[in-house]
Image (cartoon, rainbow, N blue to C red; front, side, top):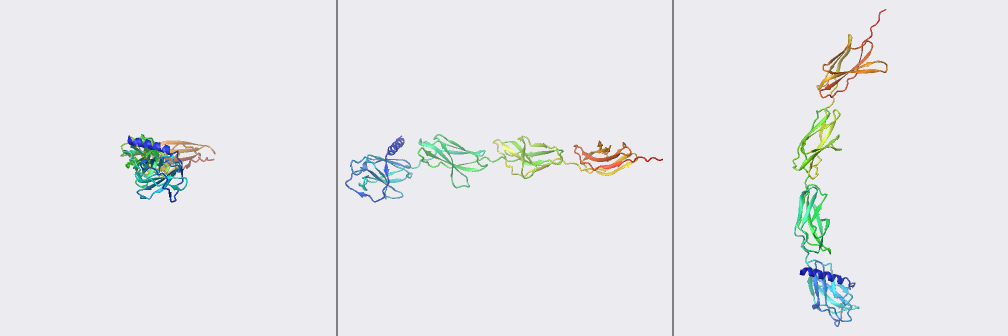
Length: 424
């Protein structure tokens, strides 16, 4: 209660003193008139703050006096060597506030009566007083780790009711300087969340409370916390290379317990340009990418996503998958007319071939033709008895595997059954 009364008194003194006028300090050696009335040393009273001291005294009645000179010495730095710091120009003024002082420091003061000339009275006796020490910081502070790209700092509100705000400061183990990152207004505020941080990095924090007149307390204790690491990636991603018109992916689950889903990325390039293909649940460890193209190459990456939305590092090697390619085309070994039929023989060309399709093109005119397909041929031989003399036929062969994937068609072979020559 006594301390609060002092604070109120000091505030009152400050308001009173703000109406006083001062003139520039004269640094010349003072001229002493011993007949001038001296300020009563016993009447001097003071109230100290952390960086200021307020004074009051009994005024002098000598009509020659127009004001007062104030002298000061920092006992730790200046010893007893006093300097004139200010002049009050009204002898009816009996209050003075000395500001911008060092905390927890002892000062010596003297006051003299001043005249309109350079003459002054003898000074008072030494008046020794001290500024208050810097206030203790907040008594409790905690930093909370394992949050996604953020750290939460909480503290106990400062007990001093002059506190108006808190300055939050941060540094990392790799930096030596504290950085002011935010000011939180309100004495009863007790929380700050530092956002947009790096993953899995340790940060150091402290809090400095500030009064309404911008006086800082001692820094709080240093606390540190670490942002949440990215989830572990998946293990052993594999992609198929022998499936018809699809690529099958499978992988082992991430070791992170809070993974809730996986992102599947695909690209035609192993190094970049990956785009999100599909998101699947954490219990799904396979995916089939259906592709309407034979022998198509894609590259894949799979990432883990945790329940805070953090994604595992995508800077990993991509896995290549390939749809089953086209068959090699058959190799024609024989194409000729034998008797009244066309005979075709060929070699498989690819051990995947399960059947063959023969394409028969019939030329019906100069610019007209039609093609007939013979499918499901299992042998390596084809006989066509449905031919007419003098008509041009073209034959080509295509292999088909058990998945319906086809090879390219062989080059066409032209066969013609000659017309019979009439005898006259």
